Image (cartoon, rainbow, N blue to C red):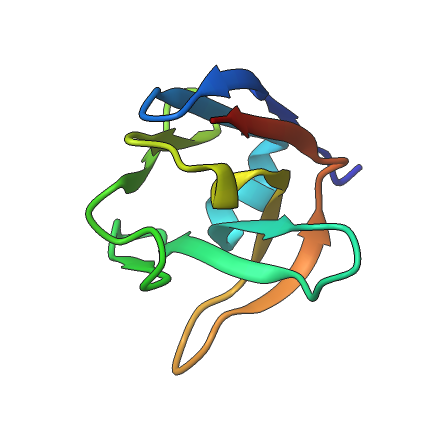
Length: 119
């Protein structure tokens, strides 16, 4: 059974930090690249960061130098460390597993975790 379970969201002040976690089922974690998306109500979903099985990462320009994606293969877990948070980072954050390549193609989704940044 495919399972992606996010945690770590919450309310944080401007300039603060949060770390999101996503635990994946073993079969998914071993087979696919992982990614974090975010969605603001009324807007399109935005790809925030991706990480391949080999550890290669990519970031949206809006979060580069502030966010870091990583994966712990022993724990089937992918993380999103978010620093220097801004109100525009407020969104529901989703973990995804999918295909990497010239562009990331999502296949599976978690349920999402809310991140709210207050000014």
